[in-house]
Image 1 (tube, rainbow, N blue to C red):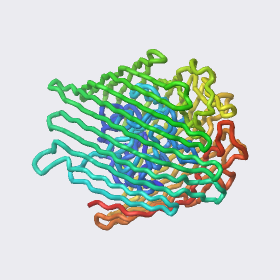
Image 2: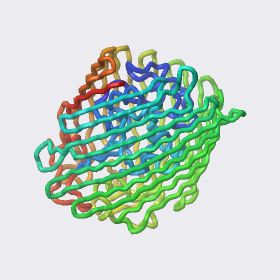
Image 3: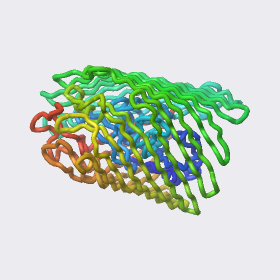
Image 4: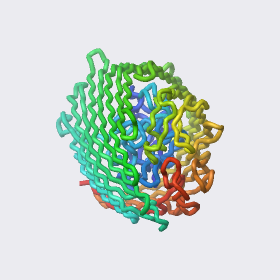
Length: 627
C-alpha cells in the first residue's frame, strides 16, 4: 500500500514528494549515490528517489519490510524468490535480481547476492531516503551492479531529540514493534560534537494456510534487529560516523510432508569519515564488513552457509561551481563457504575510479565516470559511464550510456529457492565474465505542480550465466540477454491532494528467443492521496500484466491481475492511529492454480514460482507515537 509520490528519475523527483515535500526542497537535496553530492536537479546521471515522507507512509503497512517502498516505481519490481519462505529480491528493468547491488550509505553493508540481506529484513523506520540508479552502475560500485544499484540512505539526528515507537498488528497474524531514538544534532549554543541514533525492532508472523490447501501461503517468522549509529563532527570540516547492526531471524513454511526452515544470523558494521583541507579538497574514507551464517533445512537435506564481505574506500574530491570531480581507490573482498560447494568461492576486487561533473553551460551538464578493477579470476576490467543533461525552460532531457561486468557464481534466484545440493555446474572453471551495455534517455516536462517523464532504455548482457530449469544446470550461455522498454511517470500536486501515475512497457529476450521468466510486459500504477493537519488517506491501484512462466506444469503464461490498497491515518498530538488495507481485490495465485507441483521438480522443489500474491487480502492496524 502506498500514499503520495512513489519515486522518480531525478528530474521528476524535482517535482516533489506529493503533498509532503515541496519542489524546492527536493531540487536542493544532494544525491549520495553519485558520490559528488550534487543537488538532484543538477545531476546528469538519472537517479530515482523514494523520499522520507513516502517511507513514513509505506512503513505503516509493513514496518519491518522495505519491499513496499518500491510499489509502483517504474522499472523496478520486487520478485519472490521462495514462495515457501517468503524471501524476495529486487529486479531493475526486468533483469534478474542478482544483478542488483544493494547498498547502505554507498557501501556494500548488506552483501551482494540473493539472501545476503534480503529486503524483507530491513526496517524502513531507520531510513531517510532510497536512491536508485538504473542501468549498469559498475563505474560507481564495481562488480555486481550490472542492472543498477539501490542505495539505502540512513536517517540522521534532527535538531530535537527523537523518540518514536510503532506497534502494528495484522489480521493475518503479523506483529511488529519498533523503537527509534536519536540525540539532537544541535544545542541552544552550538552544534553537538557527538550524536547518535538507535533502532530496535521485533517482528513476528504466524504461519498461514489462507486457502486451506495444506501449504502455507504466508510463512511464519520471528526476527529481531538492533542497529546503532554514531556521528561526530567538529564544525570545521571534519566528520566521522559509524554503524553496527545485528539481525537474527528464523523462517518456516511448507506442508506437513515438505517443511522448510531458514535460520539467519547477521552482523555488520561500517565507518565513514571526511576532512576538508585548506586548499578546498575533501579527503574521505569508508570501510565496511558483513558476516552472515545461514542454515537452510529443506526437510531431507540441510545446507550450511557462511558469507563474508569487506570493503574499503579512500576518496579525494574537489567540489566547484562549474566542475566537481572525485578520484578514489577501493577494494572489495567476497567469500562464500557452503556445504554443497566443493570449495569456497573467494573474490578480491581492488580498483580505482574517477567521476567528474561539469556544468558546460547554463543549459548543459556533463558527467563521466570510469572505473578499473583487478579481479583475481578475470584480470583487469574497465567500467565506463557517461551522461548529459540538457535543460530549456520547462523541458529537460538526459542521455546516459554505460558498461559494467558481473562475475558469475552459483548463488542466484533459483538457488535461493531450491538450494545448491542438486545444482550441476557445467564446466565451472570456464564460467565467463558477464558484460552489460546500456543506453537510456529520458525527457521531462515540468510546471509548478505537475511533471511528466518518459524514459526509453536498452540493455544487452553478453555471456550470461543462467540456470537451465529442466536439468538444474548452471552454464554460460552464448546468446545474450536483451531488455528494452519505456517507462512513464506523471505527478500532479495541488495540496492537499496529489496524484501519481506510472506505466512500464518491457520486452526481454534470452536463450531460444524467449522472454525472461516472471517479467511482465506491461505494468502500471495509480496513486492518489490527500493530507491535512489531522491525518491522511490514500488509495493505490497496481496492475501487473502477463508473465512467461518457467518450469510450471499448469501454464506457460500467467494471468494479469489488479491489486487495490488503501490507507488511513488520524493524528492526535503526538499519537497517530493508522489502518492499512492491502490487496482489497483479494488476488491470490491459488485461485487459478495450486502452489504445489504434481510431482517434485528436478531441482527438488515441491512448489511453482510465485507470480501473483499468495497471502490475499491483509488488514493492518496500529499506533505510532513520538515522545
